[in-house]
Length: 260
Ligand code: COA
Image 1 (cartoon, rainbow, N blue to C red):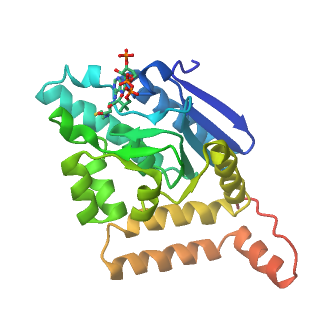
Image 2 (image 1 turned 135 degrees about the horizontal axis):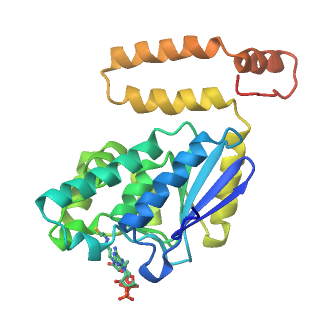
């Protein structure tokens, strides 16, 4: 079934997924979260895909949060289920075999900031605004914000943003290491596509391996993480793409990676 609140555009081998609920600043209601999960699962299965860009519809918002009208109705039990659903979808994105780039075109608040943080790279327009304002609603983040924010920018800065609910602009987000780059709004999609194309040309198994080893390794102690790296390095040495990449370098030509 066609998603209602998402637009998916595939320009082989890159997909652009646009959250499209402009009248609510692309706030993530339950239906949109479900659609996002379906779409990302389909992209994961599509062998032609090499990278995904997630952005928001319009110029004002990436995603202005989870839908507050829905959250307002939650009780102890439904609240926990709500958080677990969103966490599952965002964790799926984070663990995808395809690199996912957030092109943050405006407000990335609450669930929007959490969605961007679950992506592997974040490019922001100068008009982007980030924050975890849940505290202002008497809430806490529930889609991973209390965990990913300190992991990305450190405990000191994360604690400040989580406790104050303060919004920061794109430059501050860059300074804190929350985003990779800041570009003018009219350059945002072009730059995100440029990075996606760059990643699409790399060896897919090596890309996947980097996504995996960084994700898993950060949750291990250094010795275990280094063991994991060695294991994965060994695995990648058994691929045709590694033979091709090293041979191409030695023969002074461009490699032709085939994902094998
Ligand atoms: N959930 C549900 N609806 C939302 C929303 C959200 N997270 N964020 C914005 N909207 C809705 C508004 O209710 C409004 O709907 P209406 O026109 O039917 O009243 C519409 O989107 C436009 O938002 P509005 O507040 O009028 O825009 P603004 O430019 O004055 O302010 C924000 C923009 C982002 C500062 C403001 O919308 C906001 O603070 N949103 C909530 C952010 C938040 O707390 N997110 C975390 C949620 S857990």
